[in-house]
Image 1 (cartoon, rainbow, N blue to C red):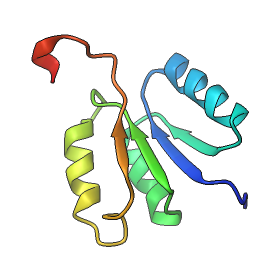
Image 2: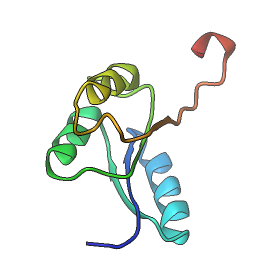
Image 3: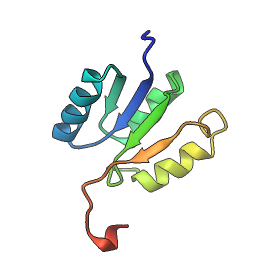
Image 4: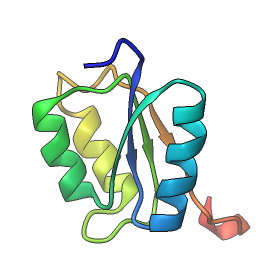
Length: 93
């Protein structure tokens, strides 16, 4: 296990996952990426990260729903969640 802060990145786009992974690893972070919310939930059963980066438009469970689920779990309610999304239109906010 690393002494570096652990970041969980939930993103369905493999190119985005690889980009963020490379950038954060280069800065010394321990990062674990998963392709969807269900896989993220499975990971969170095993380990609690210091930070969660999450896409909004995820398959099966969208980022809004997943954030609500996570914030309602006492063991995860303290973990910051940052939304990362390619949505840039005003209506996407």
